[in-house]
Length: 306
Image 1 (cartoon, one colour):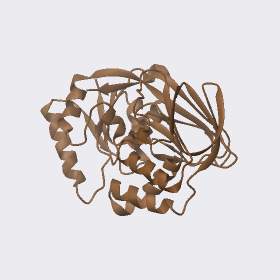
Image 2: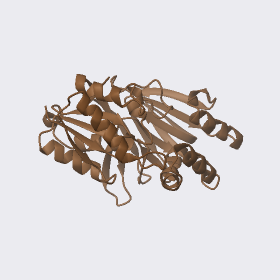
Image 3: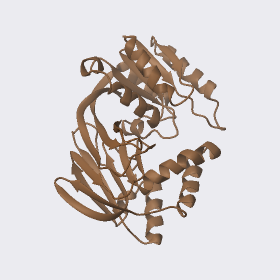
Image 4: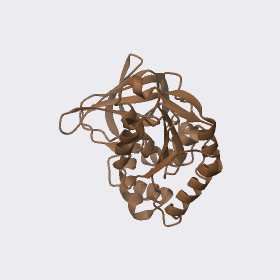
């Protein structure tokens, strides 16, 4: 089987990306994996490299990167015919700032050998893929697929701010802290109408998360193989309670927040009079205030698990 690796360097002042690549390649040789490896010089090139591998008949495509690179790979795979997609196995060696989907399967950025062994063993599970449909600022119909979650509201706004602050701070925790400080000068609650399981509610909401997997601690009971989406809605609260909720989010205890309401469904529709901040697997999306429609596509991607 032809196996291709796409190496997405993790730019950090505390780690040499070239040396980490050497460690990964040494581990691949140790397990006698026959492979080709290309490096993604920028985020936009992941989709191009995945397309190149699909067109050249690679059966295993492994992302050495984080959630954003995996998201780009999934969106590229979902553009090809199902017959082509069904012969391709997607895998990951965690190497990003955020590796939530890899963590769901028990992979760790610090344990390269574990991920390489999974590629050697080639144990496959066919997983679900979430889909967000929206209209962009140019009035075009768009759809974006996801493995983790769609965020609408405050946490989507934090993702957008964190994307900018992290370039300057080179730290996930510092970028979140800086983003939270900047949120003091931003809107923190959003009026929206959401329809879940046929029931429609109009609420002032702090944040809403629709997850196929853990969703960055917001949908910890979600699994990407049951054909369902978990939904977490955090309703409006006072400023002191708001920061308590964000603190619990950073600690991974988000569901302990008393303003949380949980649902399980196959589809969600969200409407608003004004555009809402939206992110997909941590990547900001430029959606208008037209309805957001989110559903789940069952068993679409072959994924290499431990």
